[in-house]
Image (tube, rainbow, N blue to C red):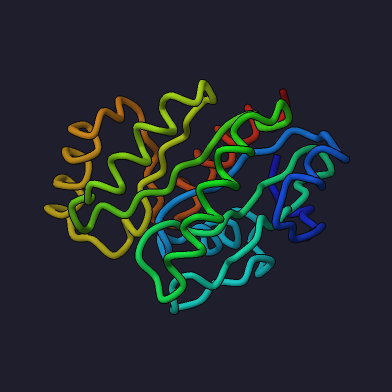
Length: 188
């Protein structure tokens, strides 16, 4: 599966679309500005998701239909942004409802380990681990790190309890690995 047949379908503040269509979905989550939209664009080799230098621009669940088989769902980021407070409450409500959906087959958690995770990051990781949904951990922005920083990020990922994780340096090899893992859940 090459992910090149992609179509933006809708943005939604709630789960009404997911319930209506019921195609399998993989939810992309992570801190604001971790690279969710950029990774979707890299995986599809197209600019379908809006990415911004300013954190907190994604406010809704954005549904991208891949190969007419499953959805990649870009979620708002969590964490400190200029939109925090109310957005944080809305994000929490959205996530709590979404993880219960039967169409959600896996959660892709994007993590930027150039900096040590804060307590809110750790709490969110542990929450996702307890949802019962398969968790695909993807270390982002690996292309911006030197070898020593990459080793440190891998060690930190293991200390956080991520036995398995993928690395994204946006090269064809790593993108193919990520596509294959996502597709394995999208085809269920």
